[in-house]
Image (cartoon, rainbow, N blue to C red):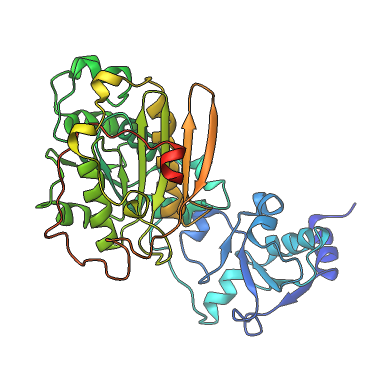
Amino acid sequence: MPTFRDHLEQIRAGIRETDVQSANQDEASFVDVREQDEVDQGLIPHAVHIPRGYLELRIEEALPDKSAPIVIYCAGGTRSALAAKSLQELGYTDVVSLAGGFTAWKGAGKSWSLPTQTLSADQRRRYSRHTLLPEVGESGQRRLLEARVLLIGAGGLGSPAALYLAAAGVGTIGVIDADVVDESNLQRQILHTTDRIGTPKVDSARLAIDALNPDVNVETHGTHLTRDNALEIIGRYDVVLDGSDNFSTRYLVNDVCTILAKPYSHGSIFRFEGQATTFDARDSSAPCYRCLFRDPPPPELAPNCSEAGVIGVLPGVIGTIQATEVVKLILGIGETLVGRLLMYDALSMTFRTLKLSKDPECPMCGSDGPDSIEGIDYTEASCAVPATAQQVLA
């Protein structure tokens, strides 16, 4: 009866192998099929890690070009031989197995490295549904854990965003809000609870995030965002999520993020309507908030949310969209809402996307835009209503 050794020899007869001296990283993609605990001990630089058990499931997303050269390796060359055979059966035409595997690579004095940071066993369990995604994986989860995100406001939009960003494993979440929890908040601000009425919202947010995910470091700023502190506070973070409810803060966030080249997600809600977009000053062709609305309306014309109202579930939709944008910005995946305005009508359950263009005459991101916020008037205004499609198109 054939043994495994017989089977392995038959497999090797039908594939190509290479030694460590002939394997060329400049010409081929390296694929590591070892288990994660092995990879934690070292790997070949720039190798794509796909555990052998997931190879057939993930390889086509990771390396879609089936004619491109691939060097596949494991610890000693056995699993990689089996893997090379599987890739041949999937239609890959230029696959070789690294004879002797990573052990031979190290023994020959070839370049290798330790992962910059590895997930703990608890983290691998917590974020397993992330690491299963080829677009995320362990490297993406580490980027999330290393990221710093600032939430402007711990209210309707900031609440769902904070919970989902914390659940996703964003390592540091800053929360800026000067208000305390009020009973009227609880209809929509899901960060807060009845027993925390009267508690500063930043402290309530910390309690909620800590209870959800102890991996997350919460930095609280129990103050209003102002001209005096905005550059310093926003400058500490990689990405900003604007959940503010007034025009003065929105323009301040936009201007500071433009000057500091910080990407940020914008959202707004009113009654049954909401909107979301993403602004990213790192892209010189992308618009900013002032490209859309050059100046805020007079304070007396700004609608009052406490009088007009808002359906409680609406901020959950918009805030979660904002959190999704932030995660994509951190991971560098997908297509964000940069250059697009997503408008949502809860009553008709419809989404509409409008294209946004950069205004070359924009007073902030245009060619003659300022390099500071000195002299800019940030007039206080009450609740800020989302624009209608007609207003945007106008």
